Length: 122
Image (cartoon, rainbow, N blue to C red; front, side, top):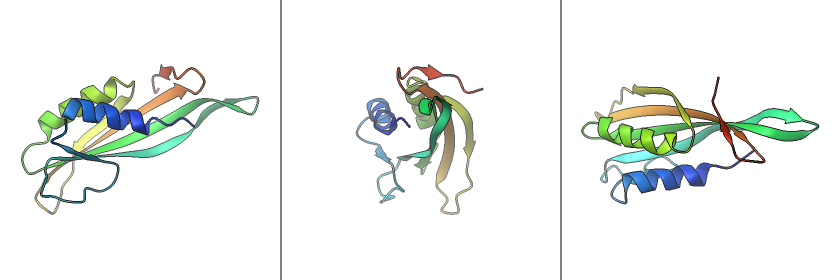
């Protein structure tokens, strides 16, 4: 297993700036919209040889909430996460009963555990 959660946060913070709430948990306050939540959905062994992990598969979900459009932030998120080598595998609007605009994005990657080289997800 390889941990890229800190890198995901740093990339989002650098691209989105300090004025947007970025959290790895459900947003604590809706008074400071927009809000971005990032979550590691899966991190598992992808390839193992001689009882040693060689490659890891990671999947991340990023949710964006806004009282207006989520589109501009979604483009920034996509740039930030793609720069890490994660590939977007899904993006869509979520019907939110609160009336907020809510977009969910999913990203995946395969990483060589020893060299940290990123491979495409096929």
